[in-house]
Image (cartoon, rainbow, N blue to C red):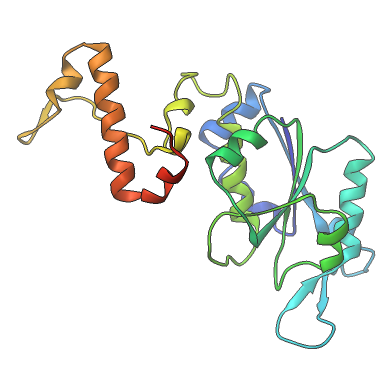
Length: 228
C-alpha cells in the first residue's frame, strides 16, 4: 500500500510515523508513506496557499491551485483508488471502512487547514470525505495520522501475530473482551479461572460472552448490525 499525504505541516508526522508498527511496516516494505508539502506547489513567490473567503466571513480558505497542482502531479505518476479529504463533515471513520480501505493500493489523504479548502476541490477532485469524529481539529494532519495507522496495521505481514487485528475492538461490531497477563494474582486481584484452564473452546466462548457484555454496556448502538 502507498499513502500520499498532502499537508502544509509535514513535520507533524515525524513522531507518529517514526515508531512502532508504522515504522516497522515501512521498513519491511509492506507500506509506503510519502509526505507532500502543498506550499511546494504554490505559484505565489511567498508560497502562499490560503486567501480570504469570497462573501466575507472569519477564517482563511486553502486555495484550489496549489492543492490541485499537487494532486495532478501525483496522478501523472500513478492511478489512485481514492483521493480522500479529511473533513469534519465527512463520513464517520469506523472499522469496516478501515477494512475496506486497507485493500486499496494507492491512496491520497488531503489535510485541510484554516476554514477548509476551496469547494471546487471537493466537487471535482475529491472522491471521498472522512471524519474521525464529531468535533473540529485545527487541521487534518492528526486525522490523517489516525487513518494511516488504522489501515497499515491491517496489511498482511505487518503485525507479528496475523490474527491480532481480527480480534480487535469493532471487528464484527464487538468490543474486545478483557485481557490479562502475568502474574495470575496481583494484590489480591485474580485472573478469571477460565483463562487459566487451558480449555480452548470454553475460553473462546467466555471471550465472546464478555465481548457481547462489554459492547452492550459501552457501545449499544453497535448491536444494530449484529446478527446473533
